[in-house]
Each structure stands twice: as structure tokens, then as C-alpha cells.
Amino acid sequence: MDFQNSVVYQIYVKSFCDSNGDGVGDLNGIRAKLPYLKSMGVDYIWVTPFFPSPMFDNGYDVADYCAVNPLFGTMRDCEDMIEEAGRLGIGFMFDMVFNHTSWDHVWFRKALAGDPEYMDYYIFRDGVNGGPPLDWTASFGTPAWEYVPDLDKWYLHLFDKSQPDLNWENPKVREELKNVIRFWLGKGVKGFRFDVLNLISKPEHLEECGPGSGSSYCKDGPRIHEFIREMVTDTGIEDLVTVGEMASTTLENCIRYSNPESHELAMCFNFHHLKVDYKNGDKWALMDPDLVRLHQIFREWQEEMSRQGGWNAVFWCNHDQPRVVSRFGDEGTYWKRSAKMLGTFIHFLRGTPYVYQGEEIGMTNAHYTDIEQYNDVECINYYQILRERGSSEQEALEVLARRSRDNSRTPMQWNPRHNAGFTNGTPWLEIPDNYRFINVETEERDPDSVLNYYRTLIRLRKQYPIIANGGIRFLETGNVRVFAYERTLGEQRLTVVCNFGGQEERAALTLNAGTVLLCNDKADQMERLQNGGLTLRPYEAFAVLS
Ligand code: GLC
Image 1 (tube, protein in one colour):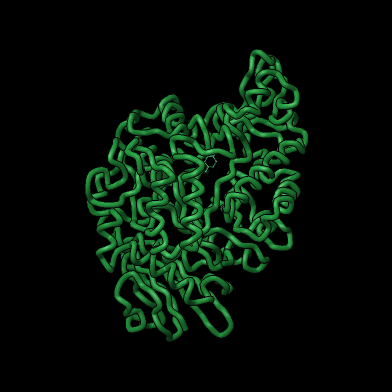
Image 2: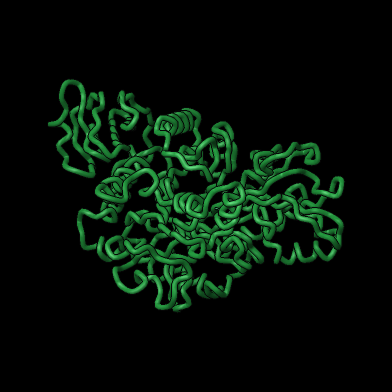
């Protein structure tokens, strides 16, 4: 199974399926739902961290890389889950959080106790004038350096203070992490997702960096390609499915990370397309999506990656992003059509598509109205920051309702009954009311559902090699709301057209005669072509093969 042909499904374990009634999803819950995932046609499952953790960042603060958090099950459950998936032809990709550990990790405990060997696993520095070594902020809104009085030193954390950054300059650290990969390979894992991987190589002269966001100084650092190549080749995972989460990276670097000649990764995630509704680049300042920018980003990345032999993970949703139908689509009249349009756009692009749990049924944002309903450390910090900057409670809550990561972390909606079928207990995070009609069971029964449409998208990829292997070129439509691209393989052409607007839109398109492979409304596009153009219905999407 090569990764170009594959579709990956992402599970946020805490919110997927609870098998033991404690209100938290678990590994046996995942196992119970493997037949469902098989019916979707997915090839790989990326499961978010389920390792022992104090859960300050819901498991992205790992205290032991080679064990299972009792909250989620046992090592036996994990082995059974891997084995059963294997029997169904599905491979697991585990999530390796190698930029930092939890402060509960034994390495950090030893470091805090003053053991010089383990202090060198992390990034400790002396303070400057009684303050931190650098005036850096961490990604969750706090300062990036934490003072340890007993050591009279500061340690770096690009995320929460409970997530100290590892020192990749230390070869012992690199060896320890390779052993983690080897451990999971031994358990039958088929691929890996690497958390914030492009932050691991810190600037050479750290002390000389200026003030600002710590991550912006650390992204794509001086030894990044060397570190990745070493990790990949030494563990023999070059031919597996590997994906690096690359924060604020560049196109050039992504081509290098994913081009087979560099012996680094199979593919990368980047997030530029998910910042087009950040006002002045600030996630916590609301703005409608800038569709011109969105189009520009996709066009540039898709065409250049194709030209220069890079490969991307293509996606709208994950556990850090608000729900796409609430963000670029419509939760009202056109809920179903817009969810299908967004799926169409992603699945026909050049790259490996990722489906995040619930996306395939069109799950929406949470619509919480009280700060008490939120759980995520990032949004709780930012709520305070917004209030301190002068936002009213109402204004701050409005921002969270659109931007909080909890929007994607609400429990999976399985059926229209109690707790959406997620748990028999009390769910750890509140479930939006719309589970009564947005849920797997209801959509299974409707041939026209978002769920069945996603199944078709995945099936078509297996049926038509042009989707996985074709080249790509974006087409001019003369309308900022209508995106169109053309895939080509040999003599074949696949033209994909998507209306990102909630109104009828006219597009100046000349379509070659062909068959409509898929569309989210009536397949009468050919008849509607008139005067060198086509009027698209709100959120209409279709693909024509010629
Ligand atoms: C990644 C994860 C996110 C986590 C962060 C720190 O961005 O996706 O959930 O908070 O890394 O590990």
C-alpha cells in the first residue's frame, strides 16, 4: 500500500469512543469501531497520543513514550487493537511528540534533581538580569522560559510550561527517541506522525535571538534536515508512512522534507491555508476567510510541490482546528452541500487526504457560551489574555467559539441517543445538540448523506489512478469564490470545480465534454454550460473526467 493511494483517518482518542463508561474515549473503543473505519475505506489510522501523561495538553505532554496511559487502556489493549486493524488491512500511525516531553517524564525529573546528564537532555540557561534568558513567548500565550529556583536556571518550553523542550543537539537524546520508534515498530505500528517536528533544531546561538514568539526562531532550524534524516534512516522507517507536522514552514523546506531523494519523510502538514481567517495573522482576532489568499496558497503549494517532487498531507481538520463546515462552509441551509463541497476540494488535490473524526459526518463547532464548558489549555489562557486586553466577556467568548481547539474535540457523534452513543457515563467535554441529526447511525441510512459521500470520495481514489498520481494545475474561473483545478495523467483529465460561496456564482469555465464523476447536487453541469461559462449553485462541487 503506497502512501499516494492511501487515505488516513485521524482519531483523537479521548473523544472517539468510550468502552468503559468513564466519559473518556479509549483504545478498546477504537477497536470496537474498526469495522466502521474499514467500511469507510481508510488505509491508515493516525491516533493521537495515549501514553502516560498528566494531560495538561491532553496527552501531548508525554511522561513515558513506551507505555499506555491507564485512562485509555493497557498495553494488551493496544496490541490487540493493532493486530485487529492489521487483519482488516488497516495500519496504525502513532503520534511521536519528540520536540518536548512532559515535566513528569523521568528524564525531566532527574534534570530537575540537578543530574547534569539529564539536564543536558533539555535546554537550561542562566537568566539575564534576574529575568529569563530571552524574552520569548510560548505558543499557548505564556512566557517560554520557566525558572527553577533550586537550580537557579531557566528551561525552554515552546508550549505549556509542563512541556519542556528536548535538546536534540545531544546525541543521547536522539538515540533515546530512535528507541521509542523501534519499540513501536516491534509492536506492529505501520507509520508515524511527528508532532511539531520542524521545531526540534534550535538556533545555533540561542542567546543572541531577539524577542518574540519562540517557535518563530526555532522553525526549520539549522540541523533540521540532518536530524530527520538520521532518525528516519537509523530506524529504517524510510518506506513507511511518515508525516511531519511543520509549523509555519516554507514551501522550499516542505519539498525537501518530503522529496524521496532527501530520505526524510513521506509527507508534511503545513497550516498556511488555515490562517486565512486570522486578522493580521492573529489567531485570536476574528475575520472572514480571505478566499483570494486561500486560493493563492493552494495554487502555489500544489503546483510547486508537483513540479519539484514534494508530497503533502491534504486536510482541513484536525484536533487543533475548528470544524471546517463551520469555518468555510455553512451550518444552516447548505450544511450538507457545503460539507460535501469541502470534502471534494481536498480529496481530489494532489496529496494524501486526512479525514479527522466527525468530519465525514459534517460535525460542527461546539457553540459553547460559558468559559466553564472549555477544557483546552490554549483557549483558557487566551480567554484571560483577551480579557486583559480589554475584550468583554461576551467578546472573548465569541472569539473562543470560533477559534478554540475544543471545537474539534467534542465527542464523536455515533447515534441520536443518549450522549450521542459516545459514552454511558458523563462525557469529558459537552456534546453539541445537533448530534440528534448529525451522527453516524442516521447518516448510514441516508444514501445522500455526507458520510456516504466521503465513502465515495475514498472509493474513487482507489478506482482512478489520476487522483493519486496525476499532475495538477489550477484554472482561472474569473470568480474569487469559485476554485477549479485540473488533474492530468497521460491523456486523461479530471476537472474539479468548487463554489466556496453561499450564493449562485458565475464562472468563466470551458469544460471538456466528459462524465461527471461526482457532484454534490444534480449532475447537470454539461447542460448548464452556456456562453463559455457556468452558473454554479451555492456550495456546488463536481468533478468531470474526460
Ligand atoms: C501539536 C499538536 C497540539 C499540541 C502541540 C504541542 O501542534 O497537534 O495538539 O498542543 O503540538 O505538543
